[in-house]
Amino acid sequence: MQTDAVTGNAITVYDRTAGGTLRAAGAYSTGGLGGVLGGSVVDHLASQGSLAYDGTRGLLYAVNAGSDTITVFSAGGDRLIRRQVISSGGAFPVSIAVRGNLLYVLNARDGGLGPGLPADRRLPGQGPRLAP
Image (cartoon, rainbow, N blue to C red):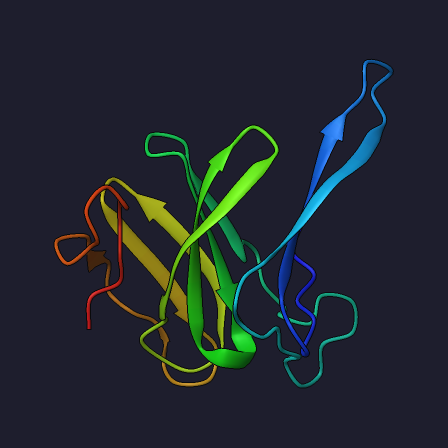
């Protein structure tokens, strides 16, 4: 779950107990800021998909709308390791998707969905990365 706090965005991780209930397992700073899209009431990003998981590479991507960035985490079980914070390529990213080695970002304030951004400029072993 993403907090989307304007003072510092974070991902909250939960474990499922044997009885099926959820138990907080940790919180991980994204290194970016959350945001509030004007007119939003419940979902301040007015988005579907502010987090995306790449199961092939074990990476979790999170939008940081208030700082126009994307955070890339390595994910293993209930542990996250922040690997990099990169530009979203626009203003106020609200949704993100990964397919193959392309990362798609919807920036709400300057033209919407950009093209699939190739992963050829990534750090070694880090999977898809936005290219300028």
